[in-house]
Length: 492
Picture 1 (tube, rainbow, N blue to C red):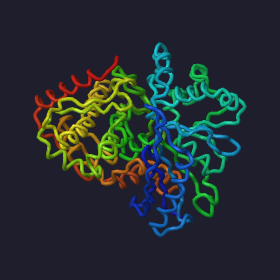
Picture 2: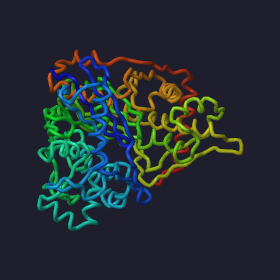
Picture 3: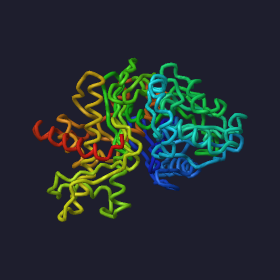
């Protein structure tokens, strides 16, 4: 009997595939980075075909690592970088442009033109006006390629976030769908009605004919056709945006529960259940899931640059050889007065300044490599702390514990400093890859491998808890200094 679940986590910097058994144990794993393209300052792109190839080849590699066959897989779950999108030909399945990545800022001017409409846009979509979201960049693409818009109106082209793209390719063109969590990140989706919003389509000039069908995250969704991953078709049991998948994987499925994922960016989400909370602090309302995958709402604060700052230290400056070196180096630093504001692609929540750029403050002649590494890690924690403070204000409740996951949650220096800044415990799970776990859980539910909330709870295990060690007065002093340096990079 097929009872393994294949989880594809297609992220910004790479693709991870996990193969899980009914007890939640990882039987096989495969990972590969994907190439980043920066054709102009502020532009970020991916190769859609490379993304698809990575999903297929890594799925096969994970199966080999587990000494399993595709016939042993009962379902596939897909989690993905949410706002990144592809436009492709419906008949051939060929992309007509590179994937435009969520970090790309090419639509900043369009966003400035739309700024007066932000109250209406937020009411309809739960989002703010920022290049982060897919809709304004799709408008840019169609405005700069009139023939593309004409083809889209004729139904010849498909738009989709990465979940749509992978499902279309794996199903060999049978399924053009997206789930509610990904749709809710496009600026085109009515958050409360859970359907494409006609007013937003008109505002952004997007033809409805190119849009996928919105569906629930928990399927069944479609089938990976015979010859893609295995000799026989394999059910695609779930598709979900990566941050909502991590929220689900962490077990934050009822109102008031939260998590932060430390990946390329850092994303703090609080499940608000059936209630949509309208933020007073420029946080986002977005789609989330209840205990068994039913639609719910969440508040979200998005930090654009987190792990990407450490990657920059490694690849851009050559200060470290491996990201894992950063914790030990940061501990060597004696300087808490060096600040790095990593606004490489603007500032996210709660500032939403797409024109802000990064800066380092407080350097002197004796500033060294350890100080810069520490400042980068501290900058991640400061940004998350500001989002959490804003979220507690919006929700009217204190978050007693912060669940942390993602690659940087393995950094013990960062997690301890985060606990110190927040004045509360930070809990890291045994499986840091909760994004992949969440998609696997949903797919396993769809396939009947797991049947209840209790079954899923048994899969989640805590690894380590970090507790605050500094006094409240010191915490406030640090945050006050951070806000002062952030003010110096903001443009509005």
